[in-house]
Length: 222
Image 1 (cartoon, one colour):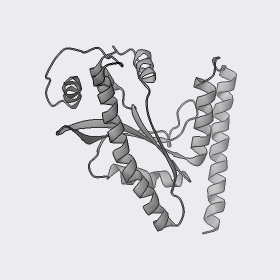
Image 2: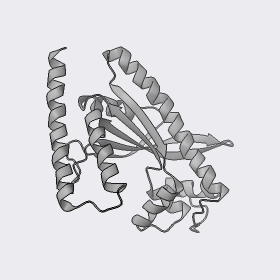
Image 3: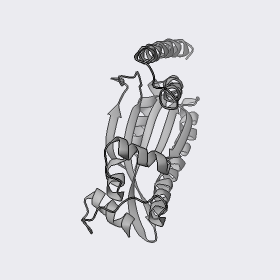
């Protein structure tokens, strides 16, 4: 099975075949692979939605304001692989594209992000592969957030498959800026000018400052 061979390669559990098999998004193998990513995402969503309700009971407010998820479309996967210069093969997809299954956790305040991060890092039945901290040092664009690439096992026909999921942690303020910036920058028909890119960076800092001041007001009420 193509999927089994390439996932084993990615896991370093032994190479069944050295052949790099071209990716075919119309193939049943590709559809099955996407279904495995979907299973992994649903498995984590169930845990995270339970956590959302549990934390509301503990803290008496929505520590997690919202959870959204998505599976990358075939076109988006191919475009990303081309952009990064990867040969379009199953092995490269599994090894190098970590955000096919994505979950975004939107916290009420930035202070809540560390709470959720610590819980995720200690969740059973997951393996943490990579962390990216854009809170202490934001991206050049102005983006802030915390990303975790993890792996969880899903079962299919008696076999266990380790599947990657990217989890992004943001506050509501961070998500507001990031969502609009993405639409402006990547969904526009025209390339963003350097002048407007710098404006977006400034707006990110302004929104961050506003959030800090609103947190102080909230804390006064406790």
